[in-house]
Image (cartoon, rainbow, N blue to C red):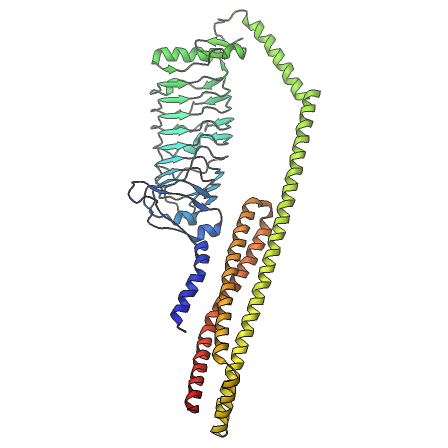
Length: 518
């Protein structure tokens, strides 16, 4: 029996196992300018550790797949990439490497950005797109001194300090639209100097007012404040000398403030948007040019009263609004009834979730039972292999002792002849060979079962986050079983030379017996 065919057979047996342990990714088109990679699934730390990227070039677009944690380890596997797109991959945490120049991570579930804290070097980033995620706050951006475009639309930011962007001297576009902003603060005594900023958007938030008195945005051309709850802007629009487009629709402006805006529009040729037709009537607001407004604060303001007896109607509506707010604050029977109904619905949903959790727990117990059974099979397999080795060792020792015993050569020949006639050693060797083949098949079946249980364990880990600790325990058991399988393979490798030696010895004995008899 040759050693090389045996080694080749071992490789063939273990090929399916290795294929499941290592994932390789490369560009699916070698001729296109942009490297596009599909179906990158790295939902565990082990998957990230075993993943390989070959023939990857810049710029890189990962088109599909799942990457829960875009970690430092994964970023280090893409050292030559400076333009990276990782949209719609379910990323929760994103590590940003300092050498990246362009990064797009749109439409994920990012709630935390991780920066490289091992070095103080500045970031090379020029464009950063993080829209449609779950960011509640932004990290320190002081090292992003080259950043030109920052888009953080459609996240869950509730407050922002403009000082966060004070060191981004190259910034040209800043969009914070459609978040949950309630306040935009600025240092009272320190001006925010972003002299290259050309476009700024706070559209679709919940801002009641905004203070621009310390903003020095000499290049600002477009300012979007639509769809908030603003009543005024603290400061003078004249401090933006380059402003050409101002979008302010969908707010609750004070009418006197709108008068100043329209005056500024006429003198600086400013382009203004307009509220939707009918909005002012539907929301019981007045109309000033093409925008809706409220005359709150007009009394004692020193402004010309252009609305006459409308103030009495406004006061009556204000009283009605205050009564309605008081009713809501104190709680009414109808509201209480609705809340109780919602509570009942939530309790029902909770019960269903508990039932599903119980079902998943049962499935997990079945999986653990299957692992225990597989472990027992592995122990049995080790016992059978050890018995076979012991039997072969006893046969070899017996034949060796018979050969080395003193006495008449004729007696030894007769004894050998008797044993040769009574025992068919080639047949026994062939049976041992068949037994080894069956053991290899059993090992291959065991390996496939290991892979199946490993895959099911990963699925259960993704579905049952609350059972993470138990799944980790199961994973540990699987690793032990896999290690036992490797030890069995090593024992087989050690056993094969012994079988070759026994087979050769028996063949020599048989040939020697034939020559003596002749």
